[in-house]
Image (cartoon, rainbow, N blue to C red; front, side):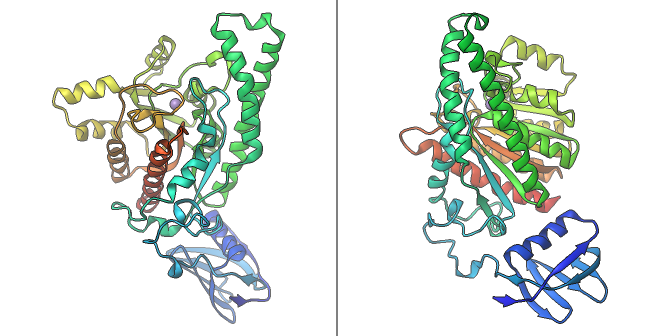
Length: 425
Ligand SMILES: [Mn+2]
């Protein structure tokens, strides 16, 4: 621990460097102080501050600064020299048993405990807690990204108020879905009208909440992963990303198109996430869907009228091409070519074969294998494209730990791939 009396600093430009410096002020990392020269290390990079030249130098980026004086106490950053990555996961640490704080972590996972509009079986609102427990059993060695975790992964705890709101509205939604599924008219029943209004207002609230949370994390320079909850939860994050990056494309692994306009009269149903994203966010240039095996007539028409904004690789077509001798490499290369430079990954776990997620909300036979998916993601990064964010949604919570185990392992690989992408672009 080193004590420094005072710090204040003003900088021009380079938000990320500025944020990193603020993080250092808040959480630590000052290593040497000699008069007006300060050496800081952060994420393995050296930041050098010199008063006399008013220059902040971080690796190869030079940022002009107007002035600074020093006045603060620094804590030492997460010290990995005392952390044994080969030991069993410590549940007193954070996700994957890692010892990082949010401030120190490069990648922050935001759980969104929400499942108001799920169709068949509920449970995914509690997936993050189950995944957290299952994540303790993961070995911290990734063959593709060996030291990715050293940059810090951190998961926030699930917001209890959001979960309570989801539970309450879910009960209303169950009654409502039961009512309309029998062909009853909503207008005839005042209670159902009121329920529908409340659910749609709740979804609006949730979308704004996710937007605010993710925007704040992005502004602090974090890599952000969203962990559902049902698939509707990512809309606010997509809006925050559009503001930050401008144009981007979505790569969606899913059994369903999620292109329904107002499914069951819910404005923000899990079955409408991609329809809503494409409608409300013009910055989304392209949607590439993979593994789809459940589609309505309305969605089929939407895709065909989308002017190639939506490209859908149906599970049936992928498999038939493979049965005819085409390789996954060839098909994956073609998928990569469809994507623009910035890519957001929306990973609905039901895109995988249901053996991987038997308790997901709306399981459908068929689907993708985990390694098939990771192979494609690595190809996207090798192509020079940039992963700007991802969500993992619809992970079920059954009586055994299988769904959470798969969810944790998929999340681990995705976090590492996200780090890999952040280095290569
Ligand atoms: Mn979905």
